[in-house]
Image (cartoon, rainbow, N blue to C red; front, side, top):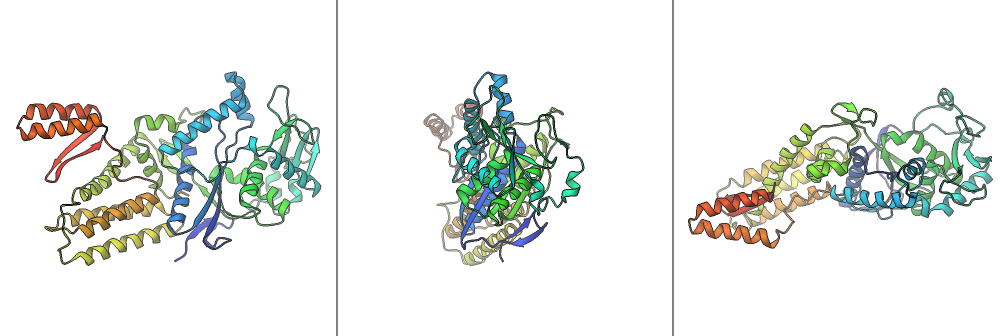
Length: 465
């Protein structure tokens, strides 16, 4: 069965057929880097990293581009408030973005273009729109003629007449029509700026992504993605600019993730419930946060609370325990049992079920359910009197593969440092010597170091608390 994607443009699921067989061109709108990312920024980072991973799992070669907006009004305001220049602030928060998203298990894009490094391309793009009659210069600003693009509103499913209601020309704007939007902004005194045919200035927000997508992926891309809040006006304006310039379809599939609420209220600065990833991962395992995000279908809203995150942690720990129980049977099993194929077939059936669920518009919520079924099956198998190495390894492989699609490391891949290794060995020797007082003291010491021990028939197991 082919992958189905819910396309915002058509408001229906469509079979995914990329422009070039086996290859996917994918663009995801990245953050404006004036602060640490909040949990709302984290959702598209996690969701579309998972989409990318799943496409790769299914054999596609994905060219993944995600930009940084490293100059705009927010950055200019932050620079004034902090007494720093815009590039310094942008560089600091790009580093912070990589630190936070790396902790969340997100792979870096193949290209992370920056607006400030794409200025010549942006200016050429605007010049071409002016030549075609889709844009005009007015007092150092350049605007896009919205009404000149006959299909404007097709992504948000609004007509120009509907959009006209409520449209206003703000103080200082020099546009001809309230629906027109800025491609280039004349610099104010003291602002960071670049030389252009229209004087010193900087790009409007919407033109940036159109120019960067064209530069790195070409005139037409397979998937364009971002948060639901970007569908209008940002993505609508991208379509208008790009298709006005090239006369070609800009993006064939549009994907948008749902909003995040905090304790059942919309997240906003005014409500004081603005949660930064930087702060969350100081107190919670970032893998648990990622697992939490993927437990809900990406198009649905998701509610965040400390209680829900703790519940997710408990569920995640159950899955990890199943995996660790399997690990501790490696080397203690044989291949002499008679029903190996029966268990291997059950594992294979769950893999196929996982693929079926994920093929249906990347339904990670149902994919998570399959992981719990895999865990239940593994737990059942470990009750067998005799276990086979072949089956144990098949279970382990499936856990690693499917969690890998979700960008989560299920195994205990961290090496204990020498001090902790030595303490565990010392405790093991104390138990052999029946010095239980010392063994308990070492256990408590390790607990203080966030290392939890569990004594089993196969030896002492450990995990980070």
